[in-house]
Image (tube, rainbow, N blue to C red; front, side, top):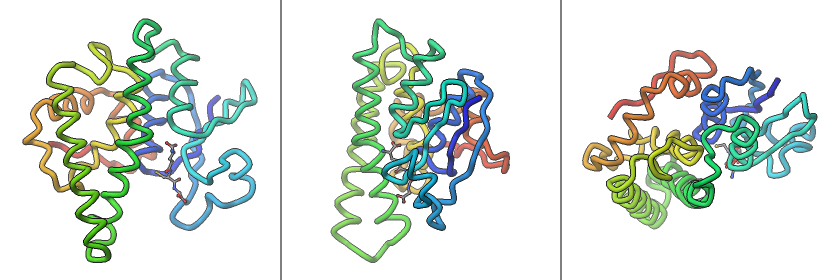
Length: 208
Ligand SMILES: N[C@@H](CCC(=O)N[C@@H](CS)C(=O)NCC(=O)O)C(=O)O
């Protein structure tokens, strides 16, 4: 049994989607990050930076923090979405997501959506970067069915929930036809639909 320490955010959803994709039984423990529960000492003992997601694999008595490390762990354990022959390619797109796409889109969320008017500099800087992320992903996906080639992989699973916040990005995903094609392909997968709404609140994946 895998225990997923979770909040309803793009980083949390990467892991619920992966667990649905590999069909592992899991239980969700919600961490109320909007009320400081990530700073409780018990949670900090498995999450040194006080962030979700974290998983505990109770069978192996191991806890793992950092979404990329969790995805790799689950992919290696299940033998899915991390093809050995293209692992170096998958790693590049996975690490680009955790080190660049996620954190920078996250800054765009903060300045543009959550605190508009607080910092013109921040709003402009991260809007520009967010647009270039859309453009760069779109250019890549013109040549590649999924991020790391022809097969759906943990790089796509990591990136999808961030692009699923496109309504608050205000960039107009429709204009990016290859990114839209990739998004729509992934958003109809039943595991993605289930993992996206793993709390069963009825939340739907935003449409293009
Ligand atoms: N690099 C981390 C980022 C995780 C992260 O930023 N989690 C956010 C929610 S999406 C969080 O727990 N925030 C609580 C806080 O910063 O206090 C990962 O990919 O797992």
